[in-house]
Length: 258
Length: 375
Image (cartoon, rainbow over all chains, first blue to last red; front, top):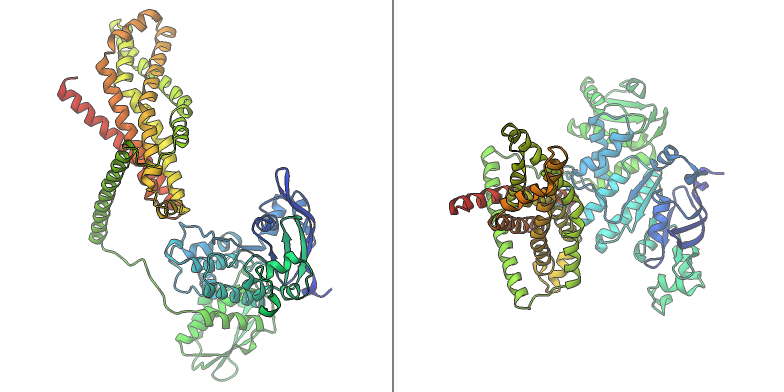
């Protein structure tokens, strides 16, 4: 099989839940190398729970998550850490460590998991900050920069080790349209240049259409994934009213608008 | 290792070719860019830099970081860089960096002289004192609105706060107070034994606990327990913009959040102090009876005769003052909290430190006033 067509992530018969309650049943999908895969759906449908399971922060109720054909939840702690080291995660609020400067935030993964010297780490950090458009802000603390810049700095930290898979939790949340568009462009460029596979949880339609190669729609009522495909194809061809309603923001004459 | 990864070839006049070989990954190590940059000066009249990556195996942004800095050095030395020989991905990344790269270096941490720093500290202290006075004023206004029935007051939350400040702290207060009573009795016993006056341990423990120690021990415990929790709670609310939400609804955060906490602690501190006094006396009694062979009835009678109503009042005045201090310090620090995790830690620490220092100062003041008044 060609390298680019191999699934990097495979989700099989996955059930998500908290204690006794199951929020999502029987999820099945796979994400190919270099693909931008969007998980979309209304608020409270379990998108963030799915992201927690995919990033190894929460064990699923049942089912499998495979990374390069390796079942994550069957690994021991060391094995899981090995897999998680290949992840980069951009959390909704950025989650930068507030007592660290931007440079220190981006440098920490490099200090932990590379053999680079201090000066080389500084060089890599400078590159990563430059990649997200934050050159010159290395000595700033997160509280001294805007929300959009915090998101970009967090992205610089997420890509510090050139991860194989980058997870985004609501990348556009809290950003104005211009900054949101900038972040979308950045995500596309990172995929094209670093070759990373990207999984993003989002309900921002503009972002979904701008960056998504494929999208899966999670439905709250049926607690299942009811559609999967290219966002534009879903909009054009889907027969499911829930998907259409979501992708058209409930507007009846969506064909004219799209 | 770096020698194998980088080979410099100056066979073409005015053109330096850098051959990049092997694996260039962040996790496996990359050569120092300064070494290569330093070698650029060794070749005369370099006008152009080109790359040969036929021997390059794997690469990631470690290579890009290396080239990014090498190119900057070349710019400085006015050497033209031809990126044509680099892999397409590297060229794209370098193009992306140069597109978004703003050369402006912003330095927010300007060097400050000693006098500037001292001056700023003084100004910060002045601002801190002013905002504390302002906060006290707001509390006074909020209390006046409460007593005139104009304040928004949630009784169910107030009762919950009373429980948190009182009943929930009983175990800790019991433990510490009994131990303090035991310690006081032991210290007294070693001295009083010399005169055969062990029975006066009852007086020492009784007066000591009731007049100051009971209130102080309870206050120090409550500063660490409840004061810190007030600061953390309000600090997190500040971080989550919950306090802003109250303000926009026209609700005074002091009235809504601070007044119930101050009131709860001011009510519970004297009660906790009385309880701590009793527990301390019990600790003394345990030592007196079990280790010194004193009669428990005699011990109790001595305790009763030694403690006057004035001692009790002095202890209660202490506890009332401590209640105000702990609650105000906790709430003030919480309300002043900035929006970061470190600031939350500072707020909590500040609440405990300020409360304990203020407790000691208040004890000294009350003791001095009692001395002057002869009570």
